[in-house]
Amino acid sequence: MAKAQAVYGLTETIRELNKVEPGLRKQFTKDAEKVAAPALDAARDGYTRVPLSGMARKWSQTNQKGTRRAIFPFTVSGARRGVKLKVDARRDAVAVMFVQQVNRGAAVFEAAGRANKNPLGDSLGPIAPGRTRVIGPRVLGKRAEVTRELVQVIKKYERRVQQKVR
Image 1 (cartoon, rainbow, N blue to C red):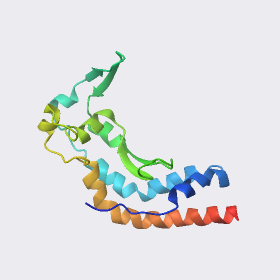
Image 2: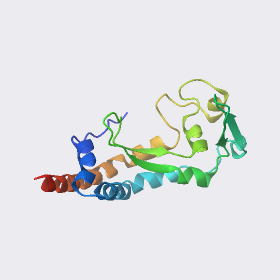
Image 3: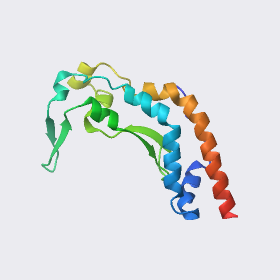
Image 4: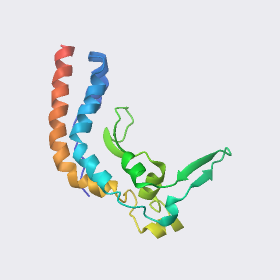
């Protein structure tokens, strides 16, 4: 398993961006998305078909409050649109930047059977705990390229923050 690249002071830099100059954090997120585009595109390209025919049909689940939430249908276009870069600078955040799947059906596909054995996970195939089916392997393949460019972007914003603070 590849180790995460650590850039110390990144969360603090991101948190200070709007304090220093309004709108700067939004610009940083846009620049980070441009740099991460190869990884995001690789993850999106991993969705080529509906994994199981039943996933293409409507299916919803009733939660504890009695509200129905639509889980499926899984669509390839929806799964591709659901791949997003998240920049999270909260103090308790596990990762500052990560690729996530926001489409509900695709997120179920990514993680089904990961935590415990179930029929859907068995039908989709085995997956190790903490892993995903499409996003993880695709993003890890582009990790070195994205990290190299992202470090340059981070340094640019770090210098900008330090100049404004002085």
